[in-house]
Length: 129
Image (cartoon, rainbow, N blue to C red; front, side, top):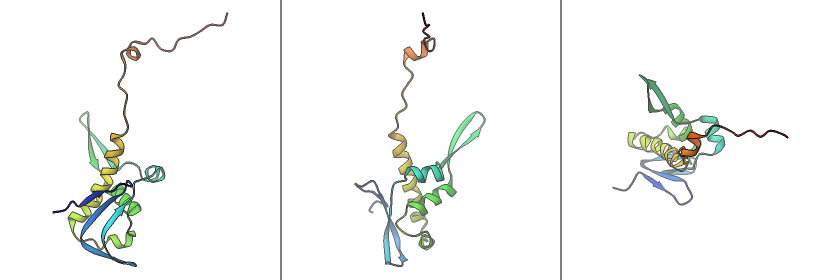
């Protein structure tokens, strides 16, 4: 069986549908998802919420936000997405959104504290003579 989600060279992702969706342009068998932009992220936020309980944080998908991303990033107008009946197709669209965020997070490196920054007495002060 072919992959449900294809990563494209231009940074988009294609979700291959089990059944076509009818749009104004005809039958669509795959939905192309563009990558989120700054404006998308600042408007919608992160699709994963952290649930705090007993001193720990558990990530949980925020399906309201994921739906907003699917509708915003999709090559198909939101009113046509409601034609999707296969749960696997809906899950693949959600997964495509989550992949964008996992890939972006992996590209952000968090520097580890260096021994010198851990033992520093803070910023040095100079006095005027």
